[in-house]
Image: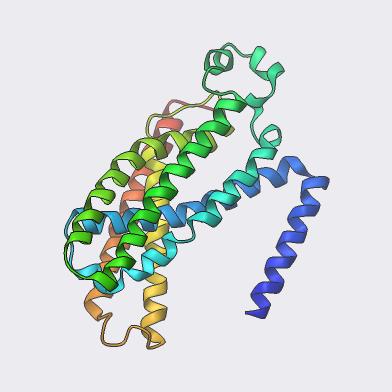
Length: 259
């Protein structure tokens, strides 16, 4: 633990130095690291929501693990918000002279402008955070109260989260990542990013479940069947992610799009 703390402090120090020495390289790296942390939490949150809406019973024994991963959401949200001061170092569309020199960027300026970008970011994070918290708090409350009322309540929260997330995450991934190349656009980009964050959330959940079981924390509760099911999930969505990734790459390749 002490070693991890030292590495974290060293990384923080290097990042702070980088903001002054090479902001053009440091800010994009902060963005990607923040996006990764946020992706782990929302990926785990979607996994929980899917279990509720599909009325799955097998995952109840390990539900606390993805809930813990999803609980990292506030950290991911804060990290994304900390990226906002670096907009000018990350996004070329944030410079008025660049937008004025491009007809395409000028046409997108109603959407790609700093005030609206910041507003959308805050809305995305607030809505996701509220729904994830609702699902987790309701699940924990059920430990004390029991019954099926709270399960049905969480099913409704989960259905709302999945529907809202599908739309807003598509926009968020385009805002935060796709606009790094603002003259390039893709209608498959949202599902490509979703497949990545969902797979990451699944993989993180699976690793923690395995470590927990080996340490004796899940003895008698987490069985081989649970590991088999999580393995199927990871395998299936690894294949899905690869398929979407190749579909995106193929479009870029045969259209010869340099951006």
